[in-house]
Image (cartoon, rainbow, N blue to C red):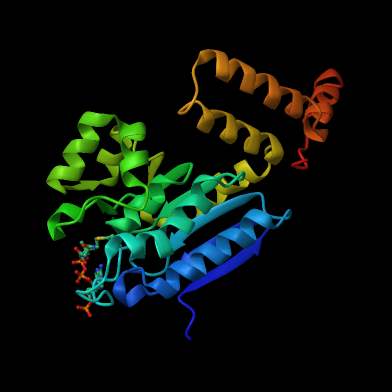
Length: 257
Ligand code: T3D
């Protein structure tokens, strides 16, 4: 079967590119399986220190390929089988994840970006949940992530009205990390990824796990969690090296361990 995405690791940055440009990278079951496998590989590979998800051509991702779903499809089963492994692999990744939204992101295409740590949006890109426009509920993690990212009121508005928003609006809602002018898109995404790849990767994993735990725990439980994770962070090579570097007035070079 023809591959529908590309997976490249360069300079410790894994780039996963959705590659069905004629269909604006609309998601098929095959593409979702490839994506889940690539994420698993990136998550396991110790060489990889940042994961970037992007799209080929003028779109990022137009959501589920509506031409490949049959009317008999049980949408719940489809979600469970094909989307949820991808959402989990992104959301539970111990490495920093960046959605480099190079063009339109709609439906589940937008949902997948919400499971990433950062959303860098091409200044011309349009974003829309869009599910309501085809009589579906938001899915692929959006009902979990969206209210947490932008608050319940705005999440409800986007979900019920299905409005399309610009990159600039996405930044003002805190939905996007930043908007990037077209001619600088690749360069700025690469620089942003590089900056993260040079940070203490193992400790980034701890920070992500700790912050994720705050959704489930009360203050006392979180204080107990921070004891665990700070104890681990304090034993990393990067922490020891950073303190030595500080004392010697040198710039630390983090190795990610
Ligand atoms: O169980 C489940 O089903 C799982 C969960 C589903 C989750 C979902 O993602 S539901 C939401 C699905 N997505 C949409 O509803 C978005 C549909 N697409 C659009 O509204 C528009 O295409 C866009 C706003 C994204 C972009 O508009 P525009 O004008 O820039 O491009 P276009 O001309 O509409 O599309 C270009 C081509 O891509 C076109 O192909 P053609 O006619 O030239 O051969 C179009 O059909 C194709 N395309 C775009 N989106 C999809 C698609 N093909 C299949 N599925 C799509 N979602």
